[in-house]
Amino acid sequence: MAEQMVTAVAGTLTLAYGVHPAEVAQIPVGTATWNYRVTTRSGRQYFAKVYLDRASMAREREAVELAAFARSGGVPVPAVHPTREGDLVEVVGRLPMSLWEFVADAETAESGLTGARWPAVGTMLGRLHRHLATHPAAEPRLRAGAEVCDLKRARARFERLIGEYGRHDDLSPFEEWAMDAARQRLALLDRVAVVLDGLPALTEQVVHGDLSALNLLLRGDEVAAVVDFQPPRPRYLAWEVARIGCDPRTVLLGDEWLTGLPELLAAYRDEHPHVHVDDLLCCVAVGCAYTLASTYPLAEPLDAPASVDASLKAYGKARHESALVLLNRLTEVKEVLNDALL
Image (cartoon, rainbow, N blue to C red; front, side, top):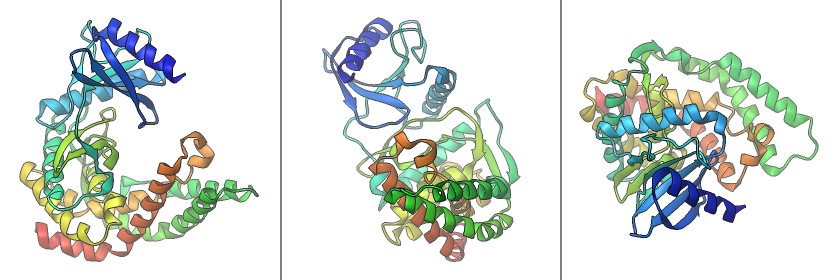
C-alpha cells in the first residue's frame, strides 16, 4: 500500500503540478492526511499533503485559502503551489492533494516554549490575529466569555463516557485512566462554572483554528512556520492564545511559563496594539475552562479508536495534568498578568 501511494503521489505531482519528483518519502505525521517530502530532479523540495476524505475537500480548500491569506499578511506560512490550472488544491486527479514549500531544518514546538521563543511566538501570534481580523468571513465582535464552553453539554458527555467505560470489563490501562480523568473533570465542572461566570465579554474572530505545538515550527528561537490552518470560523482570541501559550508540554516543564507567558503577551500586544486587554488577561482562564470541559482525547478509545496511539495517550495525560495545574493557580496567574499588562 505504501509503495502504491508513493507511485500515485508521484503521478499526481507530474500530471497536476508539472513537478517531476526524483524521490517521494512519507513523513510519519498527521492523522487526517498522508504527508510526503518531495525532492525534484533539481534538488528542490516540496511538502505534499494528501487528503484521505474526498467528501471534506470543500473545507480543506477553505483551510488552504486561509493559510494563503495569513501568508499575505506577513505571517510565516509556507507558500502553497497551485496546480497547472491555478487551483490551490488538486481534487480531480489521481489523489486529492495540496503542495507546499518544504520547511527545512525546523522542529515542532512539542518540546515546549522557553527563553527567547516566548516573545518570538507572541510577535507571530499578534501579527496573525491582527491580519485575520480583516478576513471577510467574519468581523471581530465581542461575545460573552462564559459562552466559551457549554457546561450542560460537557456534563452529559462526561456522564456518557463514564457510563460506557463502566459497562466494559476489559478496559486497557489508557481507558481506565480516561474513565478516572472523566470522573475528575465531571466533579470539577462547578468550579469551571465559577471561572466562566467571572469572564468579561471577549473578542471572537477568525483564527488559525488549531494552533497547537505540532503546527508551530521553530528554527532555534525563531518561528519558522505556522501550518495546518482550519477553515475560517470565528472563535475566541483568548482560546487560541491559550492553545499555544499554555500548551501542556510547556506548562509541565516547570514554572517558567509564569514569566514566559507575560513576555509572549507583551510581544503580542506590541504587534497587535488594538487588541482588547481582556483577551490577553483572560487567556489562561479561558484555556483552563475549555480544556476541563472537553472530552478530548478521553473519548477517543470509544469514538475513534484508530487514532489512539502512544503520542495521543501521552498528550491526553499531559493535557489533563496541565489543566489541573492551571485551575489551581488561576488566582496567582491573574495577579502576574495584571502586573505585566495593566
